[in-house]
Amino acid sequence: MTLYEDLKWRGLIKDVTSPELEEKLNNEKLTFYIGTDPTADSMHIGHYSSFLIAKRLAKAGHKPILLIGGATGRIGDPRPTTEREMKDIKEIEHNTQNLKKQAEEIFGFEVVDNYDWIKNINVIDFLRDYGKYFNINYMLDKDIIRRRLETGITFTEFSYMLLQSLDFLHLHETRGVSLQVAGSDQWGNITSGVDLIRKKTGDEVYAFTMPLILDQNGKKFGKSEGNALWLDKCKTSSYELYQYLINTDDPMIESYLKVFTFLSKEEIMDIVCKHQKEPHLRLGQKVLAREIITDLHGKDEYEKAVKISENLFNGNIKNISADDLIIGLKDVPHFKLEEKPLLDLLVDHNICTSKREAREFLNNNAISVNGEIVHDENMLIDASQAIDGKIVVIRRGKKKYFVGIVED
Image (tube, rainbow, N blue to C red; front, side, top):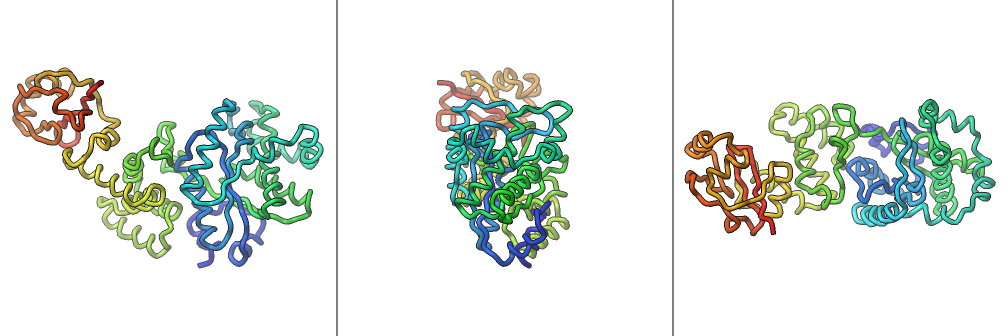
């Protein structure tokens, strides 16, 4: 299977600017770039799905350049329905530095910032050297612009297309870039860059887009109630990422394995076949989690996430450190730990609805403290029992956890 055929099979090519691109990807060594704006201080899993294309092309001998939009981030890419909020300059600079460092660490390729070449262009030169190559009717016909005309679009957002086109031109002239890769929502911007280069230099360059990765409900992959799954493990732990991936909907497994892993076609189809025969074993989800977390954070982080997950499921609290428990139990009910008998604690913090119910749970071996089943309703619970001096974990039944926090 050729590189192009593999990309198509994985569902990673939506639109191409020229049929010649197939031959060039398969038989030439292109320098290409893919970029993102610093809208946050970390990339999320949606960026990861896109930036993985850089690794795939690099494995085939092409040279990647990753671009962080320190300049375009100051403008804001037009949204389909409403104007993007303008971010503070210091926040943009902070985000840019973080993303550059993160991109270098995770992907290991050259990273550039478009603010370095755009900051020195004055408005007259911008209009003379670039603006004259853009026809307003041509710009209005671009999908993202056309969709905003009814509600209105500012000149600032309207100009974004010119800046992204300028990036392609600059990298073509200074780094020999002849290919841009982007998400399908950037089609209008990247084709404008191809046209600008052709008009200014006479050179033919290329671009292709990737479909946006969606979940079963049609939402962008990695989004949950508006919160992204961050690539920074300090913002989204490997355990949290593992929990999200292990709960992936079965119908999405095949497409996600194609997009997010470097497993071969044969390996993926074998996993999918086994998964479909015994979906309750969640083989597909486990492989997906293993491949993504290992690639992002390393084998140790993946094994740690699995260990936390299995121990929490089995109630083996004693095998987990307080810091890992705090991560794993972030979303369960928390309360301030105060010295009191266990029976009172169970009722006062709504672990049980009444003292009668609490006694029933205690008598049925359904209450554990820090992983130990307890029966004594008068057992005094206080900070001396806290794991690593930080938390006391109460478990009711097999799945209900509650965390008592020791405050300084």
